[in-house]
Length: 389
Image 1 (tube, rainbow, N blue to C red):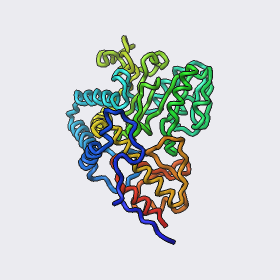
Image 2: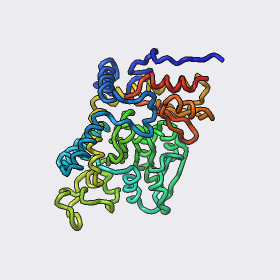
Image 3: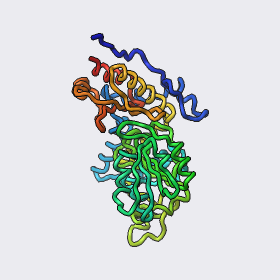
Image 4: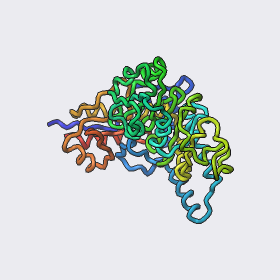
């Protein structure tokens, strides 16, 4: 049998073949200047990254600056000198960075600890009998808070038909922008149009998309996103955006002192006044997580989502093409490209990748590979060569 060698010398332009979805103002961020900034950032922040890491959909790799910030935070705390003012400053920086990355005013961003916890606020606020449309096999943290309420009318439909499933009387349609199991990107424009036509609210889970896919949180009533994947942040740095006017639909039952207009004056007894905007839904932040996330989100902003989008899609397309050439059947896309690549597993697949030092995951019976901006053509070719007979 003839062996095909995948050569990383056949390098990709940062823009790939898909182009950018960014604005004209950011067009150069996907061209030569964007590539130079991305390359420089990776050289500094990921100099120690082991080759073959293609598993961002499971866990993003912390940049060097984030590791340094976490170590400093923990060392000072362990020495009895916790920098609480610095912790609070990091929380402020995180909220502002996430607002800029997702295109909304900072007043629309709440802090969360988990996706399920943030979705629970939304679920708890729905009246009994409300109809919720969800995609079949979407991530459990998005689905379970609704499914656990036996008094809701939960409809699970195929991802390709989620927009068509919205109808008069639908209270909420909730979907992940990119599916965890296989990377399929939902037809978000169709979902928004169907919700607007029938008066339904919208909830987007951006955990597998924000960071590589340009997303405008202002297009949705709610967006929830945990930062430990594509935003390369520690576990525990999670965010919820709430569109103005949607605040009364969320339950205030879980508000603690940090959700107060003046948190440090609201530590005891009932809270006299909740914070305005989305901040009234703040969960008490895990300080070390946000100390690290502040540095990671700053890096995402410096490199720019348009440049990251172009780079990740170019590497993903290299993977798809290579896998197809090896006879692997990629999961069908819905039309939009994805940075998450899934294909059918074979009995030898996991052993070959593991032996070659490739970090990957298996989800829903599929091989899942997920390159990010810190990856290179060499990482992709390492995986493809490992699978070449």
